[in-house]
Length: 513
Image 1 (tube, rainbow, N blue to C red):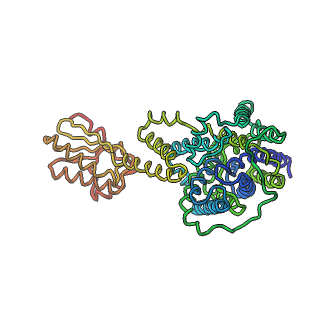
Image 2: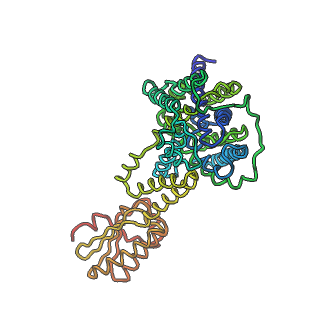
Image 3: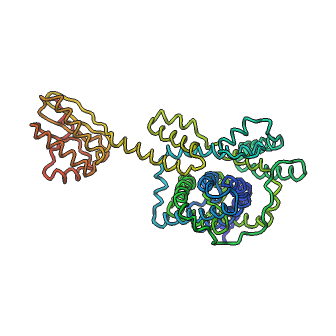
């Protein structure tokens, strides 16, 4: 091995171990968000990053339990079995299997482009609302208050407005944990705030001075691979699995794109889909739940010096090596886990960005705020909110496309029409209606000038509509000329016209007679 290779291997080793020290406590916390026992998070943190490393496109992307995917998992399974039960754990593993199959299929079909298709307003609204729900789910734990039987927001609100029920040691631990995690990052990006908070929490609890809820018993040993899934529920999990496969891929794709741009290298979304799919298969057979790429851990990996995708494999191996000794986190106060989650996701609440969006586009702001409200109202079935938000976004896009803007004016005996936008099958009828209005308003006109330089695209139906408008104007006794034909549309228009296109230069139709 060359000196350069040795340095690279050492850097990956250090980075992978650094990420594992953060992943272990995070996986415990994210497991509880997903509704499974905390120790299941360790299973989802061991094999998945190791499996993903063999196929990953990004050298920095770190795979494992993440908050958003965990919340989506809870939303999909909460009504199918008692939360935390053996049946629920089996459903979580089956859901991971379905997510894995969908992602692998999308990657093999080279459909990685779908990672770009979810509009930013939908993602903005959903992510902000989901972050509120994630924080709400951890608030009772952070305050040392027992969870109620209500909704996530309802339980959080009741815990917040009853200070008399707060457990003072839990609140103290929560405040200290947030201060260490958030403040430590300000001191240095690699400050191990999560690790420090976990060790301090375990020491406090072990010394016998903490009487709040703790992680509790953790089965010893490495999970045995199993294919014993509740297959009878597979049909019910297909749609949630597809939603998680797509929505959960938004974060890893953003991570990979961001770092590839910074390093001036390329990345392959199809390959990343496959690697994330294989990671979910690994989570499924080890009894875990759906996993994804983590922005915070990927950032630690990069800043700690990780150079290749094998740093992810080091992370997985480190967690595997820790499993036989996982009993050491049994005394960890759950308040610390709740605080770790809250400190890790609060930056994703982007209300100010949603407010500013209205300055640029009220329609897009409406999409973002609608998705935000639906996510909160439909919780825990936030997968349904995603579907509705996407449909609203598509509807807004179609409405805008149908509402093609047509500017018109008259000069002497000429009537000018200047459509702007896209002239396609959805917006084409507007052109004929506008022509009829102008001819009725200007009966003295002898020439119709249609200026096309502001059109972005003209499809076949749009070209036919333009030809029909020209024929109608000719039948009404007008001379028709077309000006400013875009180069990309000239071929389509010429074919539809079937004869010489009545085209003139813009300066000719604008020149005073």
